[in-house]
Length: 447
Image 1 (cartoon, helix red, strand yellow):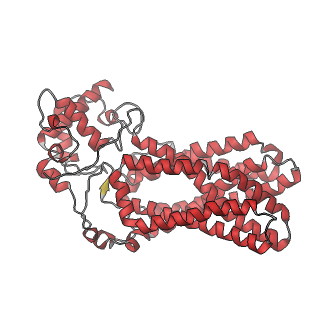
Image 2 (cartoon, helix red, strand yellow; image 1 turned 120 degrees about the horizontal axis):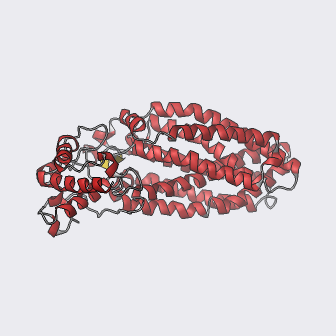
Image 3 (spheres, one colour; image 1 turned 180 degrees about the vertical axis):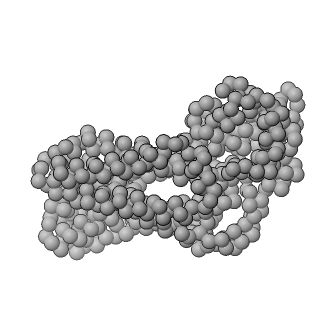
């Protein structure tokens, strides 16, 4: 028997697997971007401190570093494996595609991450305990290793959106898949926003300083890199948008919530106001204010940005050949990968998915709704929820329509042929379309 799918589908009824991954990833971005930005910032501060004899900058490095040990390297080390676990169960084939394409790149990233973890401990605890040259070298190594982890991860994230070069679809290969315009545009944009995030989180640290003059001085440093990060990041965002494929723009225009763009721009504007306040009135930036600013940045800035990025690459999860529902939808000769769409068109999902119970492989009047729910779970729930909550509830896409024939006609005429705005082509046999339509009609009645 021909087999597709290979893995069972994880569906979380309350919010859907996509939201679980999204929440975990968004929180992790806050921790990871802060750690990388702070490491690069430490490198610059240490250089100035030793060359211009400004030991107070090293005190700030020590205080911020101690904060990072909990904020980024403990909490971040929890959410990092959380991302691996949640994405693996949500899309096993997607993670498999990334590992098989970039196994040595992942290994390299882990080496740099280990250097980063050891490095931050060394930089924090060796202030004043080793000679200046040695400590400066440790700080530079920390900054470079941290930034290397970001470069590698963003290259892989860019591949998830679109492989670097067209040759990848024929030849495969790391160099063809990793390096492309989207990689460097995203790296440049995120580098700038990384400094802005570092500045906002850093204000939590400076708020604890009792020396007002010292607080003012460090707030100025943070505000300076924050303003540069917001302004430059906003400009580079346009470059990033220009590197996205056409279908990503279709998704942005038609499927993202209308409040996402205003929320992002309002957050950037709010951050500029916040940095100006750090420059002018350091007493205003208390711990409560700084924590509130950080949470606001997370909820109204990072969350919409991460959701938009994840949504724009759908329906694919990796390299434009693996659908989010795990179906292989494109040939990649260089990797020996063949599309499974012809198999689905010939035999259907019920006959080829190994984890469908035998009692549901044949559609009957008695099991039609259950078969439809099974098909919806397998084919749709990585992008849609089956309830009125969660991400993109399916019932809303049919406007409460309970006409099985009309829904079936759409499934066979549009979805099964790929004649949609951006939805994936999923060939369905007639009885599968009938069962799925019956279930969707039932969802419409509950809407």
